[in-house]
Image (cartoon, rainbow, N blue to C red):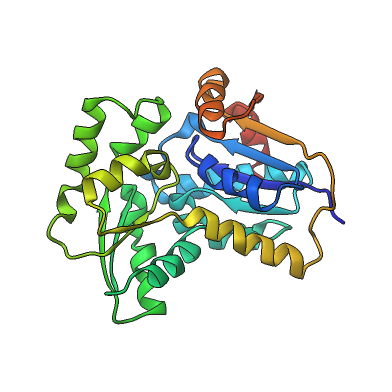
Length: 271
């Protein structure tokens, strides 16, 4: 029995879409979640900036005695995973490989779309991973940066939002894809809007649940699972904890107490 916490990081609230299935699949585990709102969005940052922010958060988790880190952010997974695996004293998982495997299982035609941040699309992390697993697969990648502010603001029900989603998905119309990877952890929060616009014939893939399943397998293999207990869930953000709390409670449907850790404080974890 290992009661050390599982740690999750994202550039904002989007990573809660991975924490939510973790609550269901690993209900006995203590968790830490860090939403780096001060540096949002990672998808518009330079790769080295994303690596630096992710390392600071990883080292923060190390001080909190975490037993595993899940990068609940596609951009950080694409750009920082290899660095974090080398630098941190616990297993580190990203979402790209899990999402790629899920997409290939879901796609009957091996024609797969990916919507993500600009940084994730520019890295071609999904295309490379999918085609490494299945060289014959066709992959269409589209950056949808306008979707992220909708989720962060908690505004995803208005007609304006529907129009923005429709515009963002326009490059995929007529592409022939049968599967679409939600390649940003913010996007499952507006899953219904995306499905309505892309059509019912396209299967949406959320990498989150598969990533949690992968984490569960590793915890079992390394004898790191917690035993029966009343778990503790701690939330941190680098900016605006009140807004983070509001959106977090809305999405998780539970009370969320959020602690502020400023960028200046995070910089202490550079080395």
